[in-house]
Image (cartoon, rainbow, N blue to C red):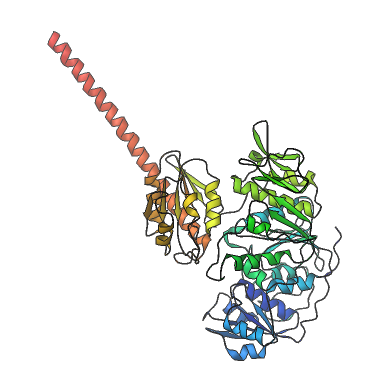
Amino acid sequence: MNALPLTPHSSLQGRKALVVGLGDTGAACVRWLLEHDAQVRGTDTRAEPPHAQHLREAFPEVALTLGGFATVDFDWADLIVASPGVALATPELQAAIKAGKEVVGDVELFARTIQGTQAKVIAITGSNGKSTVTSLVGHLCAAVGLDTVVAGNIGLPVLEALENREIVPPRSQNPLAAPARGKADAFELKRFFCAAPQGGAMPALGRPDGGHVLGRDPDVWVLELSSFQLETTSSLHPDAATVLNISQDHMDRYADLDDYAAAKTRVFAGEGVQVLNLDDPMVMAMALPGRAQWTFSLSQAPVASGESRVVDSVSTCHSPLATGHFGLTTRKDRLWLCEGEEALLPVDKLPIAGLHNAANVLAALALCRAIGLPYDGLIPALKTFEGLPHRVQRVAEVAGRTFYDDSKGTNVGATAAALLGFTGPLVLIAGGDGKGQNFSPLKEAVKHARAVVLIGRDGPLLAEAIADAAPVFRAESMEEAVNMAFKLSKPGDAVLLSPACASWDMFRNYAHRAEVFIAAVEVLKAVGGECQREQERRIRSATALSEERRRRERRKKVQRVS
């Protein structure tokens, strides 16, 4: 693909832009807007949001209103840029919309800027698996030689990614601000926030050799998009897009599940290929007339006529299946990935385990094929993708129990999918901030668990929802939960942290929750090892004592005979 130069974006010159919410995304918006000659103010309900001090030092010309919103800022602005964490239902935003002011998000600004370029766009959303599929698509695109940028909800704000490509004259002489794009040291920037996503999954930037050209588009943007980001996005028209699945999440923000799904549907704007999950009726309801639709499934196989048939556990991919459908087939007692009738790769060759990850791989393949990428580059690259931290990641084995970290499982659907990937007995650690979810779908998912250990604020609600499905126990800390799970499990079992909840009631974020879990497992491993050695010592002592007793008895018998 031949990228064209980025078009200078001058439509913001002189605009009065108010950035609402000053987290990572908001901070990137402030900087990008300034570099495009907008007048900028920032506001946040928090008294000291994460980047406030850095923004004061780098951009003293930006007025910040903190600890609450002020009407005067909204009256001043003719462009309001809302961070994803700020709901459109916020009264100040609603008043601005009613007053005819433009309310957008960072993804909308990004989309407007890249319009007319030749760069491909792949967009991924859904309740579960977004980060894994986004990272895998980026990995696959880079592996076939494309200049690839992975950004969005995965951790690198889209405007930060865009800024890394644009040639823009410097706006500030402050040493904390970035130098002009295009200079030799343009990537040795003194960033005022960390662009790495939680959990350490670094976005893919550039070509496989690490090189790319300033002032030019990449070949492909691979974007993970949340429902929050999509609410304020209307101009993004991806070449291929997917909603991986829909399950309850963020019910504290949306009126109901249909309202949440409607936000996700916005990813299908434009004329690009829709990649749809045949196993999810809510996703299939998003199919749009006249659009190219490719599908993936673990349980259904569409025939060439467009009809569907359900197979016991996996799609068998026997003739006459449609090209453009990605599923599973059995060949010589092995499960394979397939497109239509073509078997692609045995599932057991994937470094990431579990049927839920097989579905993620199928979705990623469909997205890559939808923009014309060749299998001869894609299939070998599947074998080198190791997955992301905190997504059913093996931590350690302690006395025959294997501990897994799925701290990224922050909703019911994610935890249900993780449980589906285990075939043997396990003990589940779950609970936290439930975000208003309905936990009842977990009742069926935990039926095969040996026990469930609950933590966090909404642990009691979860206990009520899964009552009688499995033995339920309560722990007041992660350390207590790990020790309790160990005692409840048996050798050969798995112990899975998959909370089905957000972490904010007990931890800074899901990565911090994982750190505490892993630390507790490491302590248990050390103590468990000592206990095992102590047990072996006692066995040796008991064996020696028993042998000594037998020798004494033999001596007594000899003495009596003599």
